[in-house]
Structures are given as structure tokens and as C-alpha cells.
Length: 322
Image (cartoon, rainbow, N blue to C red; front, side, top):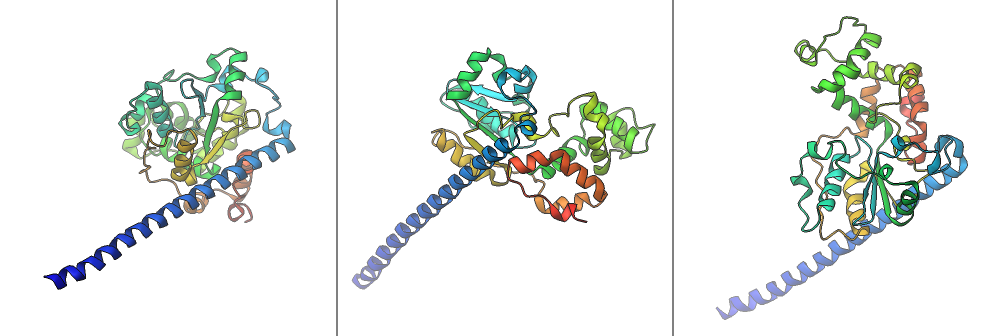
């Protein structure tokens, strides 16, 4: 028995040392990841600053101050006065989960788990206080003193995600307001089904190329501005007029969310919801664009070029160079 105890003691000591070393290793990896995230933030914000300064007319849409902006152009900026936060949400860029976080913060302590909040609830109109609800002088004060953040996404991947969500799935609103006209104008279906139910039974929906044709048609934006799910990201959040403190990317969502909550000193109170949905991956983009002619790909890039440049996404040469 004594011999057995003698054997166990060293093993226990070694096991303890292993656990201590493992904890230090994890701490080092965590610190390294955080430092990498901080460096990315510096690069992203520097990118915005340099490109905005280099082409003010293009990226500020010829508007150089808040006085030039309409109320509608500031409706995507959610304000949390309690925590001093402004979040500009962009559809198809984890905005449901970030709205869940903002909703939980607005409810006060003790904070609920954001995942306990219905996705439908946070998309109800007027659910949040937005920047455009304040007088100009109060808007300026909040923009000066609050922590402002947004999350962006590779522009073509975001378009694919919007198409999948709004046109491949059952959606009455988008069928009646967009899909029927797209089918009629670009899908060679003048007698497209009247209802989304009829369309789904017959398996009818616009192709991805039909959607691209719709976006490229000058009449689309001449008649009314782009719908928010495919509107250019810079036009929703105006990063050349608003100096954001944090620029997150969908592609590094979990790391960026963790760092942002630390910046906001909420890391011990809020856990950002895990992202389980089967996301459209950058690697699948080429497959989606196979049916889109080269010239239309190039036109589409020009349409979203500002988003690529401002937010540091590389030009997709494999799609544009033939």
C-alpha cells in the first residue's frame, strides 16, 4: 500500500503541473487572439479613415455632415442611453443576434440570455430607440461620446445570403413585393403565380441571375432606393460621416463579438449567441456566380465596390477576370 501511495504522489504532482501549464497555455492563446483582434481593429479603422479621406464625394454620398442627412438615413442606428452604445445594424450581418443583445441591455439587470429573446420580437418596428428620434444637437452629443459599432460582411456573400433568405424560402412579403416583378421582368414569366403559396407548390422562384439582373437594372434604384437587405452597407451606416469605434466582420464574428463585449465591459454579463445557421461561405461564391455572365459580374462589383474598398474586402479577381 505504501508503495502505491509513493507512486500516486508523483503522478498527482505531475498531473497538477500539467493542468497549470495547460491553463497558462490557454491564457497565452487567449491573449494572443485578443491582440490579433485588436490589431485587426486598428487596420480596419485606418482603412476607413484613409479611403474616406481620399474620396469624400463618393463615400459620403456628397453629404458632409449630419445636417445633410434625412431622418430615414439614420434609422439603422440603435441607441442605448444606459450603456452609452450606438449600434448600426446591417441586415444579413448577424443583426438579429446583435439586436437580441441590445434588447437585453435595454431591459436592464439582471440580463437575460440573448438567445431567450425571439428573433421576431427584435424585428418589430419601433422596438428600439434610434438616433433619428433625437434633435440634431442631441444626435451629435451621442455620436461624440457613445461607443459606436457596426458589423459588415463580404458584399457578394451578403447578396447570396439575402437571395437565399428572401427568394428561396417561403416569404409572402418578398414574393408579393419583389419576386413576382423579378420573374415577370427577368425570368420570362409574365404570368407568374399570384401568391407565394402557388409559387411554392409549382417550385417557381427567381433565379440568382434574375436577382442580379434586377439589381443591375437602372430602373431599380431610380424608382426607389434599394431594399435594406441588399442596399450597400456604407449607405446604411455612413462610415465616412460617423467615426465608428469598433468595426466587426461577419467572417470573424465570434472573436470580434468577444472583444467588443470586453471593450463595453460587458464580458461577464452578456454572452453573444452562438451562430448555428449554415452560413454562405466565401468558398461557395464562385458556384453561385457560374450562371452570371462576366460582364454582369463586373457591373455588380462596380455597384458594390465602395463596400469592398471601405471594409477591406479584396476584389474577387477569380470572378471578374474571366
